[in-house]
Length: 430
Image (cartoon, rainbow, N blue to C red; front, side, top):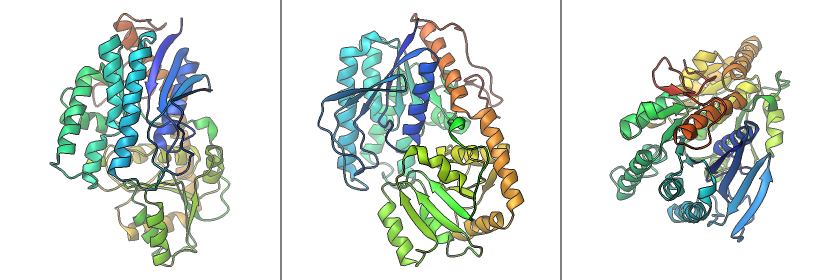
């Protein structure tokens, strides 16, 4: 008998970005694991301005075995929307989804809400309290804390205080939290004591390995960035690095987001139009070919203790494509590239990045070795099909314990990680 799960997410394909990709692939694979999956998401609008506004109250589609209900929400259309348009986008969707869950939630066996933004906790609370649904919170990052660290939200402001109080409420009412790295789990427990390690499973981010070529066919020394062009991605340093490269390296930026216009202006100001190209959004199916034709993938993260748990989805995609990764940042991304021996992490500094680009550009044997290592690592440890299988077992465990429809395996799907605590089977952190 199929188990029925409701997934609430602020983004979902065909929208671009790491979480849309993650939730899209995860729900597809859960459907293949014999879950009856329903997704509730707003009408596509990210990045702002890339989609036509929709005024439909609800639109239902099927995607890869998953039922997707697109609910109306306010849709920003301008680049880098201000606080009010963003808040309207998040809150109108959360409230609409909460009403939808109130009316329809009783036919599901569990609910999973994906955060950020934190407001997806509102429909989760409704599902938990109105229908008694086991509730899983999928935490990709501590959004409000990350925003404070990069000065989008001022520390001590009422917005920050209220947001953290709401996060505590969410973690206190939910049955389980999922985090992507041990570092994120530790931060969750430290900042929100209601999210104990015993109730937190590590279900890592990953990549649909089958979509990406096993061998690269790069014919030029192109460094590629493929992903969201936002505030947490320090692309300004990457662009400034191109002033210092000595080899015949070019930087290709694929994607769109809040910072694109500002970065294009910076490129023009520095006279780097011949070294930096902005490709814009491309169809998801084109991304594997773009990566395979590149020599290096760059994954810049703002140097901040609050972001030390972060590993960008793009890093896994570079590894799956067999190209080495050059990253900035600390913590989880350092551990990943060290464990996989798939790239280098350098200081958040233009000259350090330029030196890393030059070193790899002049050493093709090293590029191939790092690329092969990365591909091998994600095949073994970060394939989303395997990760979804582990998540399915976590959900089976939770639903069975609540008296819902148990899965075939039942029981405790978690093992003991070396760092302690629960972790989905198959995928184990070192």
